[in-house]
Image 1 (cartoon, one colour):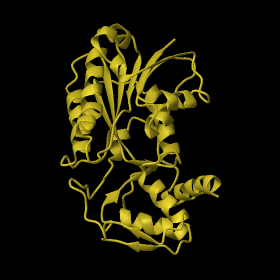
Image 2 (tube, one colour):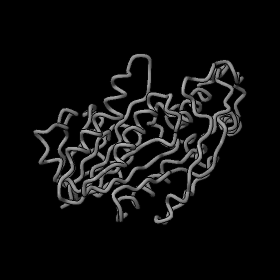
Image 3 (cartoon, one colour):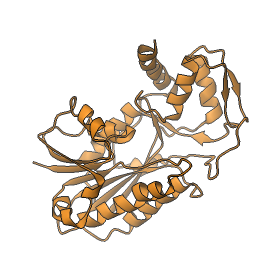
Length: 289
């Protein structure tokens, strides 16, 4: 039986990955939110499950970590006013330590979730890419599959998601929506399309030590145009004040996804942004009304 280890499975991306992993595996789940994991495990069953806290990633558990066939790193944290230390720990130090402990003579996959954002003035982006820089120098037998992922949406549980946030504010009949000018361009990929791709990633046989895949819909939209689209789909009369807020430090104004990076994997996104927003809207209407 294959052994899997996943970090960050209580989050949006990690939780969706957990839901599609093979059932007949021995899985170790490293998390800071055991309650959320137990809820998810009521739906998704595995042959054997071990739930551990982050302190599990230590030299005393090196043998267990080295025995894993597949390691998936989904951990990460976004900036707020006082969490710089946590960002550095979860976006860089902890997964780096996990990778180092996993190295031995056996061949395994280390799948890392990174971001397509590139402006390293953002501390989030800086340490996400610092980890990828480190993984790229891999000299062990472990094959690194580094997924640089665009903005995922399509799951109502993604409370911090941009599209989710806008839909909820509109459905709750906010009178005004205050935003930046919205000139930033982003690539939006529906979570259902991402999950289909991830299943192919699990079956992918690496032929080198480091593979980088850029994952997205391969279409770029301005934030402003997406908000206007959501307003149109919801038939809302909300007043949108573009330019009310300044841009954040380290803001990315473009996001381009290179489809050529996936030339060895037979996959393409199927759900358009308009269709994806309509699907998400139906889910929100079920719980809000």
